[in-house]
Length: 530
Image (cartoon, rainbow, N blue to C red):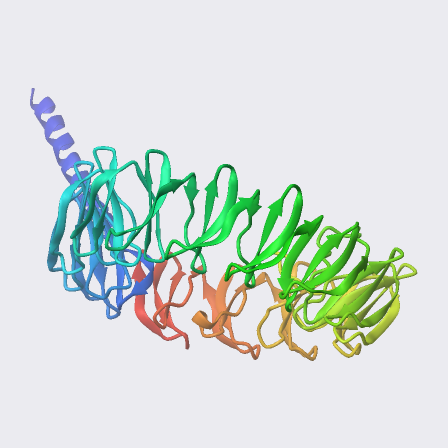
Protein backbone atom coordinates (compact mmCIF):
# COMPACT_ATOMS: atom_id res chain seq x y z
CA UNK A 1 0.00 0.00 0.00
CA UNK A 2 2.83 2.37 0.93
CA UNK A 3 4.55 1.64 -2.36
CA UNK A 4 1.31 2.43 -4.22
CA UNK A 5 1.00 5.80 -2.43
CA UNK A 6 4.62 6.61 -3.27
CA UNK A 7 3.95 5.76 -6.91
CA UNK A 8 0.89 8.05 -7.05
CA UNK A 9 2.82 10.86 -5.36
CA UNK A 10 5.70 10.49 -7.85
CA UNK A 11 3.29 10.59 -10.80
CA UNK A 12 1.63 13.68 -9.33
CA UNK A 13 4.97 15.45 -8.85
CA UNK A 14 6.05 14.52 -12.37
CA UNK A 15 2.85 15.90 -13.91
CA UNK A 16 3.21 19.01 -11.79
CA UNK A 17 6.72 19.58 -13.08
CA UNK A 18 5.66 19.01 -16.66
CA UNK A 19 2.73 21.38 -16.30
CA UNK A 20 4.79 24.07 -14.58
CA UNK A 21 7.45 23.98 -17.29
CA UNK A 22 5.07 23.84 -20.26
CA UNK A 23 2.67 26.54 -19.11
CA UNK A 24 5.07 29.50 -19.44
CA UNK A 25 6.10 28.23 -22.88
CA UNK A 26 2.48 28.09 -24.02
CA UNK A 27 1.80 31.47 -22.49
CA UNK A 28 4.87 32.93 -24.17
CA UNK A 29 3.78 31.54 -27.52
CA UNK A 30 0.33 33.06 -27.14
CA UNK A 31 1.81 36.45 -26.26
CA UNK A 32 3.78 36.74 -29.50
CA UNK A 33 2.94 39.77 -31.62
CA UNK A 34 2.69 39.21 -35.38
CA UNK A 35 3.11 42.35 -37.47
CA UNK A 36 1.27 43.29 -40.63
CA UNK A 37 3.25 44.70 -43.56
CA UNK A 38 2.50 48.44 -43.66
CA UNK A 39 2.15 51.48 -41.48
CA UNK A 40 -1.00 53.44 -42.30
CA UNK A 41 -1.49 56.88 -40.77
CA UNK A 42 1.38 56.14 -38.39
CA UNK A 43 0.00 52.85 -37.08
CA UNK A 44 0.60 49.21 -37.92
CA UNK A 45 -1.74 46.30 -37.23
CA UNK A 46 -0.46 43.41 -35.15
CA UNK A 47 -1.94 40.07 -34.09
CA UNK A 48 -1.70 38.62 -30.61
CA UNK A 49 -3.68 35.75 -29.10
CA UNK A 50 -5.60 35.53 -32.38
CA UNK A 51 -6.80 39.12 -31.92
CA UNK A 52 -5.73 42.35 -33.62
CA UNK A 53 -4.48 45.63 -32.22
CA UNK A 54 -2.48 48.67 -33.35
CA UNK A 55 0.94 50.02 -32.41
CA UNK A 56 2.82 53.19 -33.34
CA UNK A 57 6.30 53.60 -34.84
CA UNK A 58 7.88 53.46 -31.40
CA UNK A 59 6.35 50.08 -30.70
CA UNK A 60 3.82 51.45 -28.24
CA UNK A 61 0.49 49.63 -28.27
CA UNK A 62 -2.19 52.27 -28.84
CA UNK A 63 -5.07 49.87 -29.46
CA UNK A 64 -5.15 46.68 -27.44
CA UNK A 65 -5.52 43.39 -29.36
CA UNK A 66 -9.19 42.73 -28.71
CA UNK A 67 -10.58 42.72 -32.27
CA UNK A 68 -11.14 39.99 -34.83
CA UNK A 69 -10.25 42.40 -37.62
CA UNK A 70 -8.86 45.92 -38.06
CA UNK A 71 -9.02 47.84 -41.35
CA UNK A 72 -7.54 51.31 -41.74
CA UNK A 73 -8.64 53.71 -44.48
CA UNK A 74 -7.21 56.96 -45.77
CA UNK A 75 -9.10 58.72 -42.99
CA UNK A 76 -6.74 59.22 -40.07
CA UNK A 77 -9.39 59.09 -37.36
CA UNK A 78 -11.67 56.34 -38.62
CA UNK A 79 -10.71 52.68 -38.28
CA UNK A 80 -13.08 49.81 -39.00
CA UNK A 81 -13.00 46.99 -36.45
CA UNK A 82 -14.74 43.65 -36.03
CA UNK A 83 -15.65 42.20 -32.66
CA UNK A 84 -17.97 39.31 -31.88
CA UNK A 85 -18.54 39.06 -35.65
CA UNK A 86 -19.91 42.61 -35.75
CA UNK A 87 -18.41 45.74 -37.33
CA UNK A 88 -17.89 49.16 -35.79
CA UNK A 89 -15.37 52.00 -35.79
CA UNK A 90 -12.69 53.36 -33.47
CA UNK A 91 -10.28 56.29 -33.66
CA UNK A 92 -6.49 56.10 -33.56
CA UNK A 93 -6.45 56.18 -29.78
CA UNK A 94 -8.76 53.21 -29.58
CA UNK A 95 -11.83 55.19 -28.58
CA UNK A 96 -15.00 53.55 -29.84
CA UNK A 97 -16.78 55.86 -32.27
CA UNK A 98 -19.36 53.34 -33.43
CA UNK A 99 -20.01 50.33 -31.25
CA UNK A 100 -19.55 47.05 -33.17
CA UNK A 101 -23.16 46.30 -34.05
CA UNK A 102 -23.34 45.82 -37.83
CA UNK A 103 -23.13 42.60 -39.81
CA UNK A 104 -21.13 44.59 -42.35
CA UNK A 105 -19.78 48.12 -42.79
CA UNK A 106 -17.78 49.70 -45.61
CA UNK A 107 -14.18 50.51 -44.66
CA UNK A 108 -14.79 54.25 -44.69
CA UNK A 109 -13.20 55.50 -47.89
CA UNK A 110 -16.40 57.34 -48.74
CA UNK A 111 -18.82 59.49 -46.77
CA UNK A 112 -21.43 58.34 -45.90
CA UNK A 113 -20.59 54.76 -44.97
CA UNK A 114 -22.93 51.94 -45.95
CA UNK A 115 -23.76 49.53 -43.13
CA UNK A 116 -25.79 46.32 -42.99
CA UNK A 117 -27.72 44.99 -40.02
CA UNK A 118 -30.04 41.99 -40.14
CA UNK A 119 -29.75 42.03 -43.95
CA UNK A 120 -30.94 45.66 -44.11
CA UNK A 121 -28.87 48.57 -45.44
CA UNK A 122 -28.37 51.91 -43.73
CA UNK A 123 -25.95 54.84 -43.66
CA UNK A 124 -23.70 56.41 -41.05
CA UNK A 125 -21.42 59.43 -41.32
CA UNK A 126 -17.65 59.24 -40.89
CA UNK A 127 -18.15 60.81 -37.45
CA UNK A 128 -20.30 57.82 -36.49
CA UNK A 129 -23.66 59.56 -36.64
CA UNK A 130 -26.58 57.51 -37.94
CA UNK A 131 -27.91 59.03 -41.17
CA UNK A 132 -30.30 56.28 -42.21
CA UNK A 133 -31.20 53.38 -39.95
CA UNK A 134 -30.76 49.96 -41.62
CA UNK A 135 -34.12 49.48 -43.36
CA UNK A 136 -33.43 49.09 -47.09
CA UNK A 137 -32.79 45.91 -49.07
CA UNK A 138 -29.87 47.56 -50.86
CA UNK A 139 -28.12 50.93 -51.25
CA UNK A 140 -25.89 51.61 -54.25
CA UNK A 141 -22.67 53.62 -54.33
CA UNK A 142 -23.18 57.37 -54.26
CA UNK A 143 -22.69 59.44 -57.41
CA UNK A 144 -23.11 63.20 -57.52
CA UNK A 145 -24.34 63.03 -53.92
CA UNK A 146 -27.18 60.57 -54.54
CA UNK A 147 -27.70 56.79 -54.59
CA UNK A 148 -30.51 54.43 -55.36
CA UNK A 149 -32.02 52.12 -52.77
CA UNK A 150 -34.25 49.07 -53.03
CA UNK A 151 -37.21 48.48 -50.78
CA UNK A 152 -39.73 45.68 -51.26
CA UNK A 153 -38.45 45.07 -54.78
CA UNK A 154 -38.84 48.70 -55.88
CA UNK A 155 -36.19 51.35 -56.49
CA UNK A 156 -35.94 54.84 -55.04
CA UNK A 157 -33.28 57.54 -54.55
CA UNK A 158 -31.79 59.14 -51.44
CA UNK A 159 -29.20 61.86 -50.90
CA UNK A 160 -25.95 61.41 -48.98
CA UNK A 161 -27.66 63.30 -46.14
CA UNK A 162 -30.35 60.63 -45.97
CA UNK A 163 -33.04 62.78 -47.58
CA UNK A 164 -35.61 60.94 -49.68
CA UNK A 165 -35.31 62.17 -53.29
CA UNK A 166 -37.60 59.58 -54.86
CA UNK A 167 -39.77 57.03 -53.08
CA UNK A 168 -39.39 53.35 -53.95
CA UNK A 169 -41.83 53.22 -56.87
CA UNK A 170 -39.63 52.29 -59.87
CA UNK A 171 -39.04 48.88 -61.42
CA UNK A 172 -35.36 49.62 -61.76
CA UNK A 173 -32.80 52.38 -61.58
CA UNK A 174 -30.04 51.43 -63.97
CA UNK A 175 -27.48 54.19 -63.50
CA UNK A 176 -26.80 57.39 -61.64
CA UNK A 177 -24.14 59.17 -63.67
CA UNK A 178 -23.44 62.76 -64.60
CA UNK A 179 -26.12 63.93 -62.18
CA UNK A 180 -28.76 61.96 -64.12
CA UNK A 181 -30.90 59.12 -62.82
CA UNK A 182 -31.78 56.47 -65.40
CA UNK A 183 -35.09 54.85 -64.43
CA UNK A 184 -37.16 51.95 -65.74
CA UNK A 185 -40.94 51.88 -65.54
CA UNK A 186 -43.24 49.49 -67.38
CA UNK A 187 -40.11 48.09 -69.10
CA UNK A 188 -39.31 51.50 -70.60
CA UNK A 189 -36.41 53.76 -69.67
CA UNK A 190 -36.45 57.46 -68.86
CA UNK A 191 -34.32 60.10 -67.12
CA UNK A 192 -34.63 62.24 -64.00
CA UNK A 193 -32.37 64.95 -62.63
CA UNK A 194 -30.76 64.60 -59.19
CA UNK A 195 -33.75 66.30 -57.57
CA UNK A 196 -36.13 63.77 -59.07
CA UNK A 197 -37.54 66.03 -61.79
CA UNK A 198 -38.44 64.28 -65.03
CA UNK A 199 -36.03 64.98 -67.89
CA UNK A 200 -37.28 62.26 -70.23
CA UNK A 201 -40.41 60.17 -69.72
CA UNK A 202 -39.86 56.39 -69.80
CA UNK A 203 -40.14 55.85 -73.57
CA UNK A 204 -36.90 54.11 -74.58
CA UNK A 205 -36.02 50.43 -74.63
CA UNK A 206 -32.74 51.24 -72.90
CA UNK A 207 -30.65 54.19 -71.65
CA UNK A 208 -27.02 53.61 -70.69
CA UNK A 209 -24.65 55.44 -68.38
CA UNK A 210 -23.36 58.90 -69.26
CA UNK A 211 -19.85 59.32 -70.61
CA UNK A 212 -18.54 62.64 -71.91
CA UNK A 213 -22.05 64.00 -71.31
CA UNK A 214 -23.69 61.44 -73.63
CA UNK A 215 -25.52 58.15 -73.10
CA UNK A 216 -26.50 55.38 -75.48
CA UNK A 217 -30.22 54.97 -76.09
CA UNK A 218 -32.07 52.13 -77.79
CA UNK A 219 -35.45 52.24 -79.49
CA UNK A 220 -36.96 49.63 -81.76
CA UNK A 221 -33.66 47.79 -81.98
CA UNK A 222 -31.63 50.83 -83.03
CA UNK A 223 -29.06 52.86 -81.10
CA UNK A 224 -28.57 56.62 -80.72
CA UNK A 225 -27.19 59.16 -78.24
CA UNK A 226 -28.83 61.50 -75.75
CA UNK A 227 -27.36 64.27 -73.58
CA UNK A 228 -27.94 64.97 -69.89
CA UNK A 229 -30.71 67.45 -70.69
CA UNK A 230 -32.64 64.83 -72.64
CA UNK A 231 -31.82 66.22 -76.06
CA UNK A 232 -31.43 63.63 -78.81
CA UNK A 233 -27.91 64.16 -80.14
CA UNK A 234 -27.90 61.18 -82.49
CA UNK A 235 -31.21 59.68 -83.54
CA UNK A 236 -31.57 55.97 -82.72
CA UNK A 237 -31.01 54.63 -86.21
CA UNK A 238 -27.73 52.72 -85.96
CA UNK A 239 -27.17 49.04 -85.20
CA UNK A 240 -24.40 49.85 -82.76
CA UNK A 241 -22.43 52.78 -81.36
CA UNK A 242 -19.12 51.96 -79.70
CA UNK A 243 -17.33 53.57 -76.76
CA UNK A 244 -15.66 56.93 -77.18
CA UNK A 245 -11.90 57.07 -77.58
CA UNK A 246 -9.90 60.20 -78.41
CA UNK A 247 -13.14 62.10 -78.98
CA UNK A 248 -14.87 59.67 -81.37
CA UNK A 249 -16.87 56.43 -81.38
CA UNK A 250 -17.60 53.92 -84.10
CA UNK A 251 -21.13 53.78 -85.51
CA UNK A 252 -22.34 50.68 -87.34
CA UNK A 253 -25.24 50.19 -89.74
CA UNK A 254 -25.86 47.24 -92.05
CA UNK A 255 -22.32 45.95 -91.57
CA UNK A 256 -20.67 49.26 -92.45
CA UNK A 257 -18.82 51.58 -90.05
CA UNK A 258 -18.41 55.31 -89.55
CA UNK A 259 -17.74 57.75 -86.69
CA UNK A 260 -19.55 60.11 -84.36
CA UNK A 261 -17.75 62.71 -82.24
CA UNK A 262 -18.14 63.00 -78.48
CA UNK A 263 -20.15 66.17 -79.20
CA UNK A 264 -22.63 64.12 -81.20
CA UNK A 265 -21.48 65.32 -84.62
CA UNK A 266 -21.45 62.66 -87.32
CA UNK A 267 -17.88 62.60 -88.59
CA UNK A 268 -18.71 60.03 -91.21
CA UNK A 269 -21.80 58.01 -91.97
CA UNK A 270 -21.24 54.22 -91.98
CA UNK A 271 -19.67 53.68 -95.39
CA UNK A 272 -16.48 51.81 -94.51
CA UNK A 273 -15.82 48.08 -94.28
CA UNK A 274 -13.78 48.57 -91.13
CA UNK A 275 -12.39 51.39 -89.02
CA UNK A 276 -9.63 51.87 -86.45
CA UNK A 277 -9.48 54.41 -83.63
CA UNK A 278 -8.38 58.01 -84.07
CA UNK A 279 -4.76 58.81 -83.25
CA UNK A 280 -2.98 62.03 -84.10
CA UNK A 281 -6.27 63.29 -85.55
CA UNK A 282 -6.53 60.50 -88.12
CA UNK A 283 -8.30 57.15 -88.22
CA UNK A 284 -7.40 54.30 -90.53
CA UNK A 285 -10.48 53.15 -92.48
CA UNK A 286 -11.01 50.34 -94.95
CA UNK A 287 -12.76 51.25 -98.20
CA UNK A 288 -13.03 48.91 -101.18
CA UNK A 289 -10.55 46.59 -99.48
CA UNK A 290 -7.87 49.27 -99.05
CA UNK A 291 -6.73 51.36 -96.07
CA UNK A 292 -6.93 55.13 -96.13
CA UNK A 293 -7.10 57.81 -93.46
CA UNK A 294 -10.02 59.92 -92.29
CA UNK A 295 -9.67 63.22 -90.41
CA UNK A 296 -11.87 64.30 -87.50
CA UNK A 297 -13.68 66.58 -89.95
CA UNK A 298 -14.68 63.59 -92.04
CA UNK A 299 -12.29 64.22 -94.91
CA UNK A 300 -10.30 61.41 -96.54
CA UNK A 301 -6.95 63.17 -96.23
CA UNK A 302 -5.03 60.09 -97.35
CA UNK A 303 -6.84 58.10 -100.07
CA UNK A 304 -7.51 54.38 -99.57
CA UNK A 305 -4.54 52.71 -101.22
CA UNK A 306 -2.80 50.53 -98.65
CA UNK A 307 -3.18 46.81 -98.05
CA UNK A 308 -4.99 45.35 -95.05
CA UNK A 309 -3.10 42.10 -94.47
CA UNK A 310 -0.36 42.59 -91.88
CA UNK A 311 2.19 39.89 -91.12
CA UNK A 312 1.98 40.07 -87.35
CA UNK A 313 -1.10 40.05 -85.13
CA UNK A 314 0.00 43.14 -83.19
CA UNK A 315 0.77 45.19 -86.34
CA UNK A 316 -1.57 48.13 -86.93
CA UNK A 317 -2.02 50.96 -89.47
CA UNK A 318 -2.75 53.43 -86.66
CA UNK A 319 -0.58 56.53 -86.27
CA UNK A 320 1.99 56.33 -83.51
CA UNK A 321 4.47 59.17 -83.00
CA UNK A 322 3.10 60.93 -86.13
CA UNK A 323 3.98 57.95 -88.35
CA UNK A 324 2.08 54.91 -89.57
CA UNK A 325 3.35 51.62 -90.95
CA UNK A 326 1.52 50.73 -94.17
CA UNK A 327 1.77 48.14 -96.97
CA UNK A 328 1.84 48.45 -100.75
CA UNK A 329 2.37 45.58 -103.20
CA UNK A 330 3.21 43.32 -100.29
CA UNK A 331 6.00 45.61 -99.03
CA UNK A 332 6.08 47.70 -95.87
CA UNK A 333 6.73 51.43 -95.71
CA UNK A 334 6.06 54.41 -93.44
CA UNK A 335 3.98 57.56 -94.03
CA UNK A 336 3.44 60.75 -92.06
CA UNK A 337 0.09 62.37 -91.23
CA UNK A 338 0.09 64.17 -94.58
CA UNK A 339 0.53 60.93 -96.49
CA UNK A 340 4.15 61.68 -97.35
CA UNK A 341 6.26 58.54 -97.69
CA UNK A 342 8.97 58.58 -95.03
CA UNK A 343 10.25 55.06 -95.66
CA UNK A 344 9.99 53.54 -99.13
CA UNK A 345 7.98 50.37 -99.70
CA UNK A 346 10.96 48.03 -99.86
CA UNK A 347 10.77 46.11 -96.59
CA UNK A 348 9.33 42.68 -95.89
CA UNK A 349 8.17 43.85 -92.47
CA UNK A 350 8.27 46.92 -90.25
CA UNK A 351 7.21 46.65 -86.62
CA UNK A 352 5.22 49.26 -84.68
CA UNK A 353 6.99 52.36 -83.37
CA UNK A 354 7.65 52.47 -79.66
CA UNK A 355 7.26 55.61 -77.57
CA UNK A 356 10.86 56.56 -78.28
CA UNK A 357 10.13 56.59 -82.02
CA UNK A 358 12.04 53.42 -82.91
CA UNK A 359 10.84 50.55 -85.11
CA UNK A 360 12.42 47.32 -86.32
CA UNK A 361 12.74 46.76 -90.08
CA UNK A 362 13.16 43.41 -91.85
CA UNK A 363 14.50 42.81 -95.36
CA UNK A 364 16.26 39.91 -97.09
CA UNK A 365 16.01 37.93 -93.85
CA UNK A 366 18.00 40.54 -91.92
CA UNK A 367 16.96 43.12 -89.31
CA UNK A 368 17.71 46.81 -88.84
CA UNK A 369 15.87 49.75 -87.29
CA UNK A 370 14.54 53.19 -88.17
CA UNK A 371 13.39 56.33 -86.40
CA UNK A 372 9.94 57.87 -86.61
CA UNK A 373 11.11 60.51 -89.11
CA UNK A 374 12.05 57.74 -91.55
CA UNK A 375 15.78 57.75 -90.94
CA UNK A 376 17.36 54.32 -91.32
CA UNK A 377 19.71 54.13 -88.34
CA UNK A 378 20.87 50.58 -88.95
CA UNK A 379 20.43 48.84 -92.30
CA UNK A 380 19.07 45.31 -92.40
CA UNK A 381 22.19 43.39 -91.39
CA UNK A 382 21.45 41.67 -88.08
CA UNK A 383 20.10 38.14 -87.74
CA UNK A 384 18.11 39.20 -84.70
CA UNK A 385 16.85 42.53 -83.35
CA UNK A 386 14.11 43.39 -80.91
CA UNK A 387 12.82 46.38 -79.01
CA UNK A 388 13.04 46.00 -75.23
CA UNK A 389 9.71 45.10 -73.67
CA UNK A 390 8.15 44.34 -70.34
CA UNK A 391 6.33 41.09 -69.74
CA UNK A 392 3.00 42.69 -70.68
CA UNK A 393 4.38 43.53 -74.15
CA UNK A 394 4.49 47.31 -73.77
CA UNK A 395 7.40 48.70 -75.80
CA UNK A 396 9.83 50.73 -73.73
CA UNK A 397 13.49 51.70 -73.66
CA UNK A 398 15.41 53.87 -76.13
CA UNK A 399 17.78 51.11 -77.20
CA UNK A 400 17.62 48.09 -79.48
CA UNK A 401 18.66 44.57 -78.56
CA UNK A 402 20.73 42.46 -80.94
CA UNK A 403 21.97 38.90 -80.65
CA UNK A 404 25.26 37.25 -81.59
CA UNK A 405 26.28 33.68 -80.76
CA UNK A 406 23.01 33.35 -78.85
CA UNK A 407 23.97 36.23 -76.53
CA UNK A 408 22.26 39.62 -76.30
CA UNK A 409 23.79 43.08 -76.55
CA UNK A 410 22.40 46.56 -77.17
CA UNK A 411 22.59 49.39 -79.67
CA UNK A 412 21.72 52.95 -78.69
CA UNK A 413 19.22 54.98 -80.71
CA UNK A 414 22.06 56.08 -83.00
CA UNK A 415 23.05 52.51 -83.80
CA UNK A 416 26.21 52.45 -81.68
CA UNK A 417 26.99 49.31 -79.69
CA UNK A 418 26.70 50.24 -76.01
CA UNK A 419 26.56 46.69 -74.64
CA UNK A 420 28.52 43.86 -76.18
CA UNK A 421 26.65 40.62 -76.89
CA UNK A 422 27.53 38.65 -73.78
CA UNK A 423 24.34 38.47 -71.74
CA UNK A 424 21.54 35.92 -71.84
CA UNK A 425 18.89 38.65 -71.79
CA UNK A 426 18.43 42.43 -71.54
CA UNK A 427 15.36 44.23 -70.17
CA UNK A 428 14.56 47.87 -69.40
CA UNK A 429 13.98 49.07 -65.84
CA UNK A 430 11.95 52.00 -67.24
CA UNK A 431 13.80 54.40 -64.94
CA UNK A 432 16.66 56.64 -66.02
CA UNK A 433 17.41 54.34 -68.93
CA UNK A 434 18.71 51.62 -66.62
CA UNK A 435 19.06 48.14 -68.09
CA UNK A 436 18.57 44.80 -66.35
CA UNK A 437 20.89 42.04 -67.56
CA UNK A 438 20.70 38.29 -67.04
CA UNK A 439 23.68 35.97 -67.13
CA UNK A 440 23.61 32.31 -66.10
CA UNK A 441 20.40 32.84 -64.19
CA UNK A 442 21.75 35.82 -62.24
CA UNK A 443 20.79 39.49 -62.57
CA UNK A 444 22.79 42.70 -62.80
CA UNK A 445 22.25 46.34 -63.76
CA UNK A 446 23.78 48.64 -66.35
CA UNK A 447 23.48 52.36 -66.99
CA UNK A 448 21.90 53.73 -70.17
CA UNK A 449 25.38 53.94 -71.67
CA UNK A 450 26.18 50.31 -70.83
CA UNK A 451 28.30 50.94 -67.74
CA UNK A 452 28.15 48.10 -65.24
CA UNK A 453 26.47 49.32 -62.04
CA UNK A 454 25.80 45.89 -60.55
CA UNK A 455 27.50 42.72 -61.71
CA UNK A 456 25.08 39.91 -62.60
CA UNK A 457 25.30 37.95 -59.37
CA UNK A 458 21.88 38.59 -57.82
CA UNK A 459 18.98 36.16 -57.71
CA UNK A 460 16.64 39.02 -58.61
CA UNK A 461 16.43 42.80 -58.89
CA UNK A 462 12.98 44.37 -58.63
CA UNK A 463 11.86 47.52 -60.49
CA UNK A 464 12.41 51.09 -59.30
CA UNK A 465 9.30 52.88 -58.05
CA UNK A 466 8.80 56.40 -56.75
CA UNK A 467 6.84 55.12 -53.74
CA UNK A 468 9.94 53.12 -52.79
CA UNK A 469 12.18 56.20 -53.07
CA UNK A 470 13.53 54.66 -56.28
CA UNK A 471 15.10 51.88 -54.28
CA UNK A 472 14.85 48.42 -55.82
CA UNK A 473 14.74 45.27 -53.72
CA UNK A 474 17.57 42.86 -54.46
CA UNK A 475 17.90 39.18 -53.64
CA UNK A 476 21.38 37.80 -53.05
CA UNK A 477 21.79 34.18 -51.97
CA UNK A 478 18.29 34.20 -50.50
CA UNK A 479 18.77 37.44 -48.56
CA UNK A 480 17.04 40.73 -49.39
CA UNK A 481 18.22 44.34 -49.39
CA UNK A 482 17.87 47.49 -51.48
CA UNK A 483 19.91 49.22 -54.17
CA UNK A 484 19.55 52.78 -55.50
CA UNK A 485 19.49 53.81 -59.16
CA UNK A 486 23.22 54.54 -59.10
CA UNK A 487 23.98 50.93 -58.28
CA UNK A 488 24.88 51.63 -54.66
CA UNK A 489 23.76 49.05 -52.10
CA UNK A 490 21.79 51.21 -49.66
CA UNK A 491 20.57 48.34 -47.50
CA UNK A 492 22.79 45.27 -47.48
CA UNK A 493 21.08 41.98 -48.39
CA UNK A 494 20.54 40.50 -44.93
CA UNK A 495 16.81 40.03 -44.55
CA UNK A 496 14.77 36.91 -45.18
CA UNK A 497 11.88 39.03 -46.43
CA UNK A 498 11.16 42.68 -47.27
CA UNK A 499 7.98 44.54 -48.17
CA UNK A 500 7.30 47.83 -49.96
CA UNK A 501 7.99 51.24 -48.47
CA UNK A 502 5.03 53.08 -47.00
CA UNK A 503 5.16 56.23 -44.90
CA UNK A 504 8.95 56.07 -45.05
CA UNK A 505 9.26 52.59 -43.58
CA UNK A 506 9.56 49.06 -44.94
CA UNK A 507 8.68 45.74 -43.31
CA UNK A 508 11.63 43.36 -42.88
CA UNK A 509 12.09 39.86 -41.47
CA UNK A 510 15.33 38.34 -40.18
CA UNK A 511 15.97 35.13 -38.27
CA UNK A 512 12.24 34.67 -37.78
CA UNK A 513 11.75 38.16 -36.29
CA UNK A 514 10.11 41.15 -37.94
CA UNK A 515 10.24 44.92 -37.65
CA UNK A 516 10.55 48.07 -39.75
CA UNK A 517 13.49 50.02 -41.11
CA UNK A 518 13.75 53.36 -42.92
CA UNK A 519 15.15 54.07 -46.39
CA UNK A 520 18.68 54.34 -44.97
CA UNK A 521 18.48 50.95 -43.31
CA UNK A 522 18.07 52.33 -39.80
CA UNK A 523 15.93 50.14 -37.57
CA UNK A 524 12.88 52.13 -36.49
CA UNK A 525 10.76 49.34 -35.03
CA UNK A 526 12.99 46.68 -33.50
CA UNK A 527 13.01 43.20 -35.01
CA UNK A 528 11.44 41.52 -32.01
CA UNK A 529 8.09 40.58 -33.49
CA UNK A 530 6.84 37.53 -35.30
